Length: 411
Ligand code: HDL
Ligand code: ZN
Image (cartoon, rainbow, N blue to C red; front, side, top):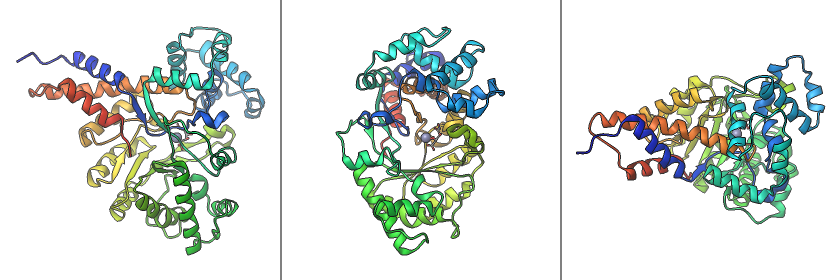
């Protein structure tokens, strides 16, 4: 009987297997390159990512919000680089990510300015760079976040374009469901005769919109981000009524899941724009009641508050139609990824999706997955080492099979 591998040997083996596995990224804000300027990439987009915007105002509380927003993007990036990377050590996860990307691209990271980096990106073409980033990050496919109500995006889908098969469609619901009756006017503008009231006509119009756009996008799931106050049942809530009487029926008919991303407090500081959202603890009872009352609807669930992470694991043990996914947004930091991934392996085995990147900028795929692969491999190796103590040692095939289940999840 060969000696059981040491924990360190296991971690190396699992990490190498994970590095070799082309990953399916279940939630991003990336776009098919055919959607032109909607796909963000390059050093200035990377450095002005909203996570870093929040951080630069902490480094420079004297900086006026309006002054920053009036700056050109390259000037914003230069300011952030000076304040967070030159005058201070870039120890935050968002700052570290920039260095990981630059290093992976062969760019010097201890530099006073972004001249060399801008020269590098000026030599790239978007389609060539998409191929490079997918190769470096070893990504198979990414799920987009598609909003037909977006004035820049909707018309391009109506016109039609040749799709890149690496970018999968997801119908995002926030702009048509949240803030009702704003969505009613938006539906009418697209030719769906919704009333402002929650009438049968409204639910029919919403269902037609959902079906038409799931078809057009070849949507693999529908997604919505919800506030901590989201509750079910709640007959007074247009969101709850539209989800239960329009979204879930269409998801059931089409055999696709609904991703509910719960816990966002929108724009607690509007002056920060995209960076202005915060979080709150959400109601796991609502998640359990929905899973119980809609047993034939599959729910992809991610919650934004750390306190909800353990509750979601247990709710998923009770309801097989709940699939927890990712360490979302404010949880996408090493200390919390380790904690949450450990509790998920311990309570759910392999029946969860450990991570999604949430990338807004293409190049982020490189860092978000390099950082997460290391952490997921570390935790899985720990669990294998625990099994080794009982004489159960994973084979290379076991490891490959387990990683494939975890990180190539297709809803
Ligand atoms: O609603 C969402 O999909 C969130 O991920 C937001 O887009 C958020 O601003 C974000 O980018 N988180 O990483
Ligand atoms: Zn997102």
